[in-house]
Length: 295
Length: 247
Image (cartoon, rainbow over all chains, first blue to last red; front, side):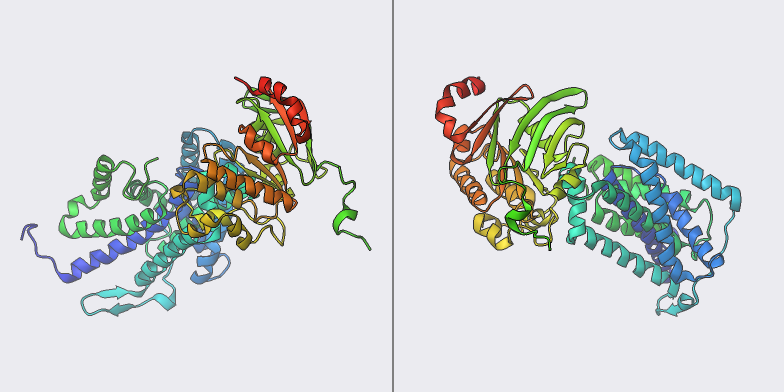
């Protein structure tokens, strides 16, 4: 065997599953980034921090309000989405029309502040969030054991991604969004309140991040650093998929998660870098990204 | 009982639907309009003439609120539009067909056509009427907006503002760069719209085209209106016009 050890089916499928789980988070996070970038032309560095806030919101919904996981799935994205709308209205709005570097710096600073605040109050270590009882347990697929919660994460995030894609590409609301991405001035001159739409889109994008945070809470712990851990890979996913491409970010998210998982099986030393190597290769061959259009 | 129907709601037949007075506008630091004065009455086709750079397009964009930095007055149906955002102005019943046509490449023809939201409950022309005016569009509904010919783009740009319910249309050089047969079709359409009671403010370089449909002309130069006359006075003013527009 080339890699020096034989690979069991259990190991292979186990890593494939972990890859799909990670891919689910990559897809949801990069999808939010893509929506925000397409519409606002902002590279939202606060995305990871707001994903973390989403997980904390789930924790508060459970321990503060006494409402379970299912409520958190609804309430946390709404809360973080509202926070995002406030951020857009009060801060990002003022940077419109300036070099995108300013909004990049602002959101990066925001990420540090948000993460710092949570670290200050909750420390660096995590707080556990139990898997909802309806989704606990494992099922035996014959060739491997599949934890129900993980299956749920994959199915649910794929559904959310598809629904988002459908909304943007196939509905009237999505047509407004695509049109305003192309020519916001004209869309506004047709009577659409574009500034309000931009605020809502930012809220929606970070709401997706919060939703991913809720999904992640029972898998990882709820930790202030959880966003910072994942955001670098997510940005690589966005670059590989093509900035602003909706379908690109979804497909690339899942595929790269799986590639990362398989690398853990076949060549574990490279598992942390493989995404970035792919990014470098894609940038050399297709600088606009796999699904990106050349500007 | 209040009578809101028809003529009783209208103060006087000749009262302008658009009254522009002392309108000034800036692109950033550059002062483009230096006090534009003209008016448009309900049901009229009014054409702005003038050389390139005279401020015709900027006048339309200022009325629409697309050019934000502006002073003076532009009253539409009695409502002051200077200071309003363009989405608010659109909802008063003003619609623009921009010079660059503004067809969205990431939307197909149907999505482009359906994009501008209806500003009145009943809306404007039905799709059937629009397809009767522009039969080509119906055949191309599934095509991408970027795949259309120049003429088709122009028809789509006009068609999509007809179904919103806006009764005041601003058309910026609708014949620019189009083949004669398509220019004729656009001309027939504008005449038809006029018969239906639409009010149209036209910017046009193609003077012969404008002469077939306009009721009145305003001539612009250096960001001001410098002359005005009715279509009936056209031949008497031909000499002056050549002077205004000649290169």
